[in-house]
Amino acid sequence: MNRFQSLYSRILNWNWYLIFALIPITGLTLLASLAGSMVAPPSVVLVLILAALWLIPYLLKRGTLPMQAVPILVFGLAALVSTALAFFVITPEYKNISFLRNVLKGIVTLVLGLITYLVIASFPKKTSQIKKALQIINWAGFAILAWTALRLGYWYIFHDYSSWVTSIQRFFATGTLTTGRALGFTMEPSWLAHQLNMLFLPFWLAATIQKSTVHPKRILGISFENILLVGGIITMMLTLSRAGIAAFFLVIAMLFVIFNRRFVNWLQEKFQAKKKDSEKVQVKRIRFRKALITVSLILIYLLIVVLVAILLTKLDSRMATLFNFNFRNQNAFLDYANNLKFGERVAYWVAGWNIFNGHPVVGVGVGLAGYYMPSNLPSYSWGMVEVRSIAYRSSMLFNIKSLWVRILAETGLVGFAIFLGWLFVIFLSARYLLKNENSLMRTIGWAGIFMLVAMILDGFSVDSFALPYIWATTGLVTAASTLAFTSSVKSGSR
Image (cartoon, rainbow, N blue to C red; front, side, top):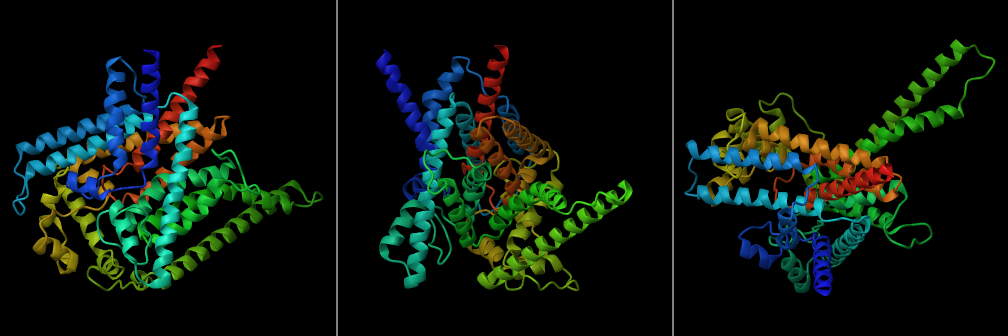
C-alpha cells in the first residue's frame, strides 16, 4: 500500500509538472481536430487528468479550496445563470448556427478555465513544488525563444520556409504560418504575445528586479531569468502585436512610476541645499528641484514613447499612418483605427458594448454574443473587408475579440463586477507576498501584479477562457499566498 501511495504521488507530481512543460502549445493540431476548435492546449488535458485523479477525490475527502477561489466560482455561477436565462428569451438566429452547440462550447471553455485555476491553485502543498514549476516554466519559455529564433532566422536568411519548418509549426498549431512575425507554438502572433504577457514575462521581469532565481547557477552574476527576459522582450517585439507590446510597455510604465520617486529623491540628495540658507529657503529649493527633476523625467519618458512610436511606423506597415488623425471626419476614431488596420477590432468592441447596453444586468449568456453582433455592429464597419467576409462568406459567428467587452456583453454588470472583484483579490494576494521574507514569494507577488497590469490592455486582444495563461499565473499567486499565510500562522502559533 505504501508503494502504491508513493507511485500515486509521483504520478500526480509528474502530471503537475507536465502541465507547465506543455503550456506554450495553444492548439496541438491533432487535439484541435478532435476538439473541433483552434484553441486546444494539451496542458488543459493534463489539468483534467489531475482534476479526475486528485481534485475530485480531494474535495470528496472534505479538502478545502483557497479562499481566493470563492469569487471566481461565484462568477462561474453568475455566468451559468445568465446563460440559463437566455433560454427564456428569443435569441437572434444566424446562418442556422446551432444555439445549443455554442452555449455548450461557451460553458465548457469557461469550466476548463476555472478547473485549470483550481488545480494549479490547490495542488501545491510545498514551496518546492512551486519552485520546480517555475523552473519548468523557464525551460518551456526557453523552448519558445529558441524555436522563434530558429524559424525567424530561417525566414530572414532564405525569405521562405523549408518544408520541415512548416511541418513542425503546423504540428504544434493550427492556422497559417505568418511570415516574418514571431509565433512560438501558437496559431497567431497575438496569442504568443498573450502568453508572454500573462505568464512568462511577468515571472522573468519579477525575478530580475528581485535579483532572484529558481536555478542553482549564475554565469558572471547573470541568472537564467535575466537572459530569458531579454529574449522575451525581443520576441514580444517580433510578434508585432500592437496590444501585446502596449500591454508590456504599460508594465514598464508602472515600474517607472514606482521607482521614479526613489530616483527623484536620490537625485535630490546629490544637490542638497546649502546649510547656511534658512529653512524656508531650503524647503523652496528642495520643492523646485524635485519639480524640475520630475518634469524633466516626464519629458524624457514622452520622448522615449515618441521614438518607440516612430520606430514602430518603420517596422510595421500597419503603423505607417500612426500620426495621421483627421478630426473633420464623421467617424474620426473609427477611420483612424481602420487606417491602422485594427478598425475591425474597434467595430467588434463597439458591437459588444452595444449588446451590453441592451442587456446591462446579466448579459446575453456565455457564448451567445455572436448572435447579437450583426445587428449591433456600427454602420461604418460594413465597409470593412473582414466584416463583410465573415458576414457573407463565412459560416462562423462574429467574435468580440476582447475579454473585457465579452464579459460585459455575456454576463452583464453582475458578472463583470464579480470578475473584477476576483482580480482584486488576486492583487491583494500578490501584494501580501511582497512583504514575505522569502525572495521566491516576493518574485511571485511581483509577477502577479505585472500580469494584472498587462491584462488591462491585453484584455482587448484575446477573449478566450480556454487559454490557460491567466489561470496559471493567478493559480500560482494563489498557491504561494496560501502557503505563505499557512506558514505565518504556524510560526505565529509557536
